[in-house]
Amino acid sequence: MLSLAFALLLVAPQAPPAETRVVEYLMANVKPGQPVVVSELYNTVFTAPEERAALNRLFDTFFKIPLYLAQQQKAAGKPPTLAEIAEQFRFQVPGEADVMLRIMESDPRMPKFVTRDAATGEVTGVDVETILAHPRFGKALERTIAGWEGQPAPAFSVTTYDGKPLTSESLVGKPHLLYFWFTGCPPCTRTAPLLAELDRAYAAKGFRIVGLNADRVLELPYRDEDRAAYAAKNGLAFTLAHMTAQAQEAYGAVSVFPTMFFVDRRGVVVRQLVNFQEKATLEEAVKMALR
Image 1: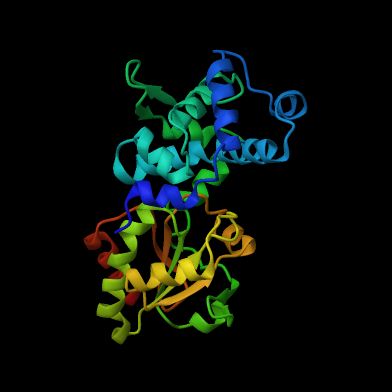
Image 2: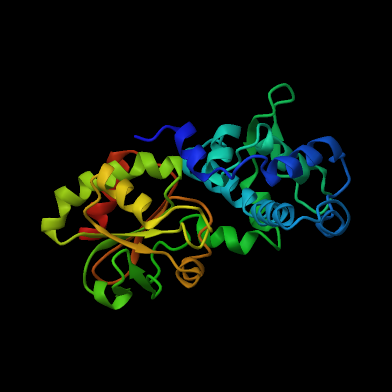
């Protein structure tokens, strides 16, 4: 299993990273009750292309964090730790997860849905109902917190690692799992060997697994050789393909990895799981799809 340090090393940009400069500036300048105005930072503070790219990434992440916090609260019955937030969003600068939460807390436009420990900064509670009631986040959250269960699985068209087309039509009548993941994702690294075991156990019963790798859409610096080595190391014999932005959007704009959709013979999503799950939970979802 890859260590977290090794996984982050693979993803991290070369020093001095522009994201470090952006995060350090935010740490020093975020003030309670004052929103961070990205356009002002873009025009007056961070003018280098790599700095603006880092700022854009953080801005995009800013709107995914509430959904992730709510998903984790609902799935695990408790909020994620700062370390788990950092893993999920590839925050590599020390204190980066904390400052992103501080930005949310300082912005009067954001709903007050998080409580934190004053000493450690760890999240102690997430008010899911407040997020659901919010006009910006509510609809998206409804779609991502088990919102697909009982619904037809959306159509998709992707390309496998070896360049062959793969469409949802090829899965008609077949119970299957769509597994959204990326190569350097620590929860995915824990999940992959479990899925390999389930594939070996249930492939003969007609169950298929399709792994949709998000490296290219997320613009991560992994090569085909890296992905092949990862598959070999984890014994992934199931179908591996490249996620597209269209497939990502079709399944509710997947932003938390891994996200898994278990689909039965009728083409209906019977179980939706987010983040790492124990083998027993995964196996029960496989059995639901096979019924």
